[in-house]
Picture 1 (cartoon, rainbow, N blue to C red):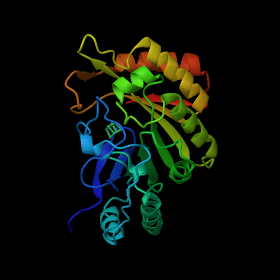
Picture 2: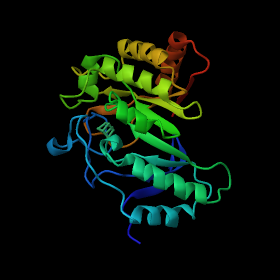
Picture 3: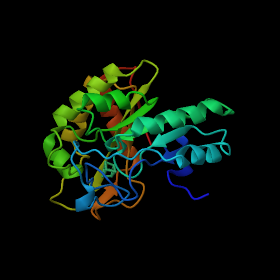
Length: 266
Ligand code: SF4
């Protein structure tokens, strides 16, 4: 059977064995054009405003496809929405979630059931109706790797209609407060270095410190620090090493001072 919606499962650094679900059109659709994006640069026609919505309801094939794959992986850890851009741009995201939940709950699992997980770049969380949808996922991985607008523009290169990073930080904070107690919020911080002398990457002391203060405010369940692992969109981007990740964790812990927030690196 040809596959329309799913990728993998793959062993993910952050999620364990994860089946990817893509609910966007075949080509990338995103509100950002991150310099480190591992699915390539966001083309002109692929870069959209956070106000943009696409209606792409699931076809009957989605349920069939999920069922036929999931029965082979009773030890799966996560059914993960994301991969080809920003999934909250699809108005029908909850139709997909409903089907995925039904299929998952109908099957027998060797350990815990796989979590219904969502990757979001956080740009659409300013909208109440989007937070209402997002909070229904059991694990939300929200991107935040800068804390000031100059680095936001440099690193994530957002669509011009994207709100300022302070508003995005406020909306992630709101999301956490609105999420059910048994659903978890993880903040994903991707740090990278730059070979271009005039280009300051987000791996600089000022950004690390400001980001820690933003996370302190958000109070997520988990912070995931990681770096590029595949070819980035821009040639000048390269990964930080594990030693630097441990240093960042130390700085985060000193500023955040909250044992309830787990901080991990990958
Ligand atoms: S938000 Fe994600 S998909 Fe969009 S450009 Fe950045 S890394 Fe790529």
